[in-house]
Length: 204
Image 1 (cartoon, one colour):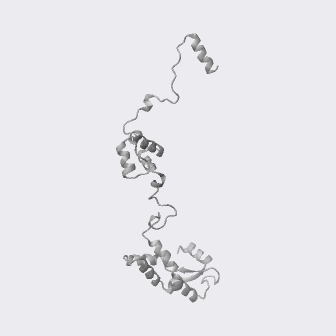
Image 2 (spheres, rainbow, N blue to C red; image 1 turned 60 degrees about the vertical axis):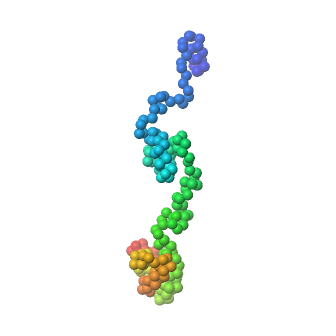
């Protein structure tokens, strides 16, 4: 029997009509907020202002801290009348994958920049002389193709030793010191295949 038919029988039989409830209406017990619960803390204006405005936590971070979802935090902020940040403002100080220099997530105080520039300048001072000494042949398979110069003394070790001994050097002076620290015996000529095998076998 359809819903309309049931209501017709109730009207004509003299039975009192059933009370209607609004669709989606929650009971009073469900609406009650338990003190010190996550829902109550989201509605704490002092706490939310401190976390979001003063400490500039993200919605996700506040949600993890309070044990609720980020959308719940956003709703709570709006109900409290706390202005929310735009996406561009929220990401202003967040390092992006393409960020360079001190804004990059792997920034270590400029050492990587020194390494990169020093490597570029090693060609005339170190790479070329090693190749000439080894007569442009791989010292393992004697190939003349795809030659590289392998550091017998790790390049990073040279850079770190300079940085440790002379911590007050500026970048240009540090690069010059790194280049000067390279000796002919620190390099050996290898083809790319032998170079790859050497690293795989010995981890050097």
